[in-house]
Length: 389
Image (cartoon, rainbow, N blue to C red; front, side):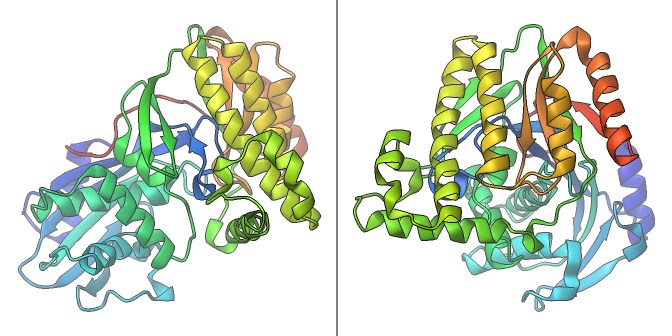
């Protein structure tokens, strides 16, 4: 859908001739560094060209009217600035409502209602972070429409995370919102989630492309074991802190983990901590490999990441493993892994550019044979972070 169609739809939905302002925030794919962001480790995501569009016109009252082209059957949902407390029946609008709530809670003046039209081209439940995209788009919209000129994009990311943690009930880390807010075309973000120090790393893949494969297994992270995994890591950290002077699992080396794993008698917690520590090291090694144009090493680290997520963190699923196994069997694939929070969603694979059609055919045949449905494929176009259009 192009911008003109969205403008026409906005006018038809809200029965207005007012010209809306338009904003966009991208989804993200994480190249490596999964479930490390809330453990004080490193992540390496990039923004995508897919994302969420928001068309908005401010009102002269305090009424909020929301409409999503992705959920047309829901019609217009009406609320107001005086009804911002979390409610279970808000469904998808909990994300934009939560961001408004977070802005006001942090002292920003949001004193006019709005008509807001949403259109997103990120597949729901794909693990490409449609929720963070919506939150960061909303934060960018509020910054511009309410002239919050001192508000940085980094702060918008933090406010989006705060909304998802405290309004939507998803205890996520900062990676998704940060990638959506701070992304840059043809670059990935090497982010230390403990300090928020980051650098933009050019993604130069030679004759390879990053291909995203959607399993079509939708995950709902709020109702999944995601929050449980975080609690298990927190329990592991507390046990290690009885001996080690650390503030996060991201401070540990693999050797320190091996030396001190006796402090983790619970096998489940030991596995969770082993993943958090090893994945953080893998992420740093992968960035170094990419900067040295060592794509073979980068691909091997992707494979190791998947094994750790499958076996130690246990956030994969049979459908995802089928896709990854099929990719590993292709001689023109350097690496493949699950990406995102897990429990479904997508894989990301490093594939020879002129073999992408063969890759899609091979994975489709394996997947359709096992599950009677075809996966979806997207070549990852790395785009810019959130902005006004």
